[in-house]
Length: 236
Image (cartoon, rainbow, N blue to C red; front, side, top):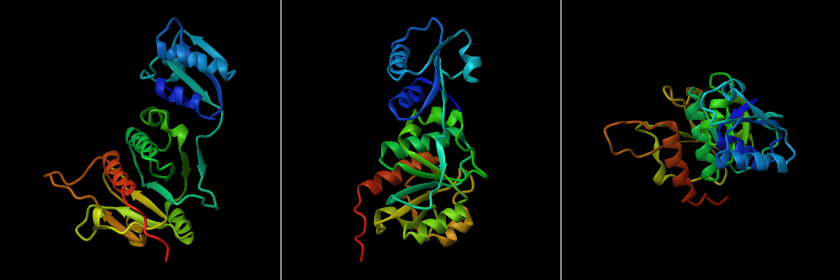
């Protein structure tokens, strides 16, 4: 996959991610690009100076640099689950929302993310750009979501769906499980019915304004911030 943008390429170079090459716009000597050149040289990654970086990156928002990833950035959800906190993104269609959600997760310490490949935008160069390179510091898994929910629950990981309904529990008053997966739905549909029906908990964010919904990355920020400040319930 081709990635582009200063932050995504810089973060890829900071991470263990293998890169085939880094391409920089010929004649561009901005400090950020010079730093990328030095980082690539230190890792013995080939550097290409190109005349048409837009063509090389297949995007105009490249900021003068792109790179080729040598391996996949997302993996199938493993049979053995080794974390106590997951975030499941249900059917996000906009790559900018998807990337922003990954960035929020990484910044707030939730580094195990699951998404559905069937009806979401998936991991695209635009999503990676919007993540500001956070994708290189998280573990991103793809799965059929119904199977993922079943798998998580079999491992005693509670499914906690965020949905702004009257019968949902205010997140500020919810008892936080020791192990949980927070589920946020798509921009229009929300969390799909099957997941809501099988969820262990349904939570909502208290909203005080006249608009009754938040952008998914904004809702995720508020929810994860609250969860970081709350102790999990101790196992019985």
